[in-house]
Image (cartoon, rainbow, N blue to C red; front, side):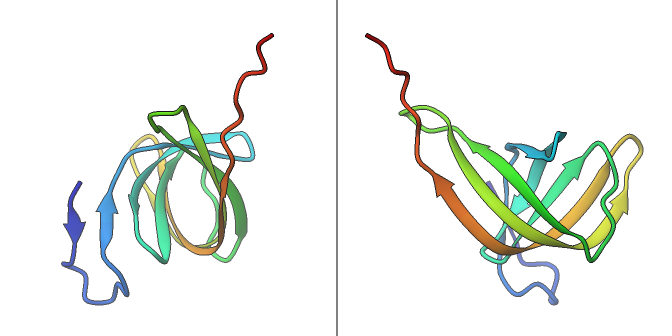
Length: 103
């Protein structure tokens, strides 16, 4: 993981990390995360100004954890085969790990 301090307009450091993400059935990955936002790479464009809810899957020693986020899309970038969306985090909740109920 690396921090990005090259952009003087960013309010907080970015940590480069790739994690699975799902926005209402649109699959993608995280590209970087900070305390105030998450940059996502997804299959379909999402226009700036839209409020989105998305799930980020975190791998942990005890199993996968899910981070439930609500964010505002503040920037859209078009890549060759995908789209980048910068989101400002409005809310974030770490969902409890659900253990298998085995008898």
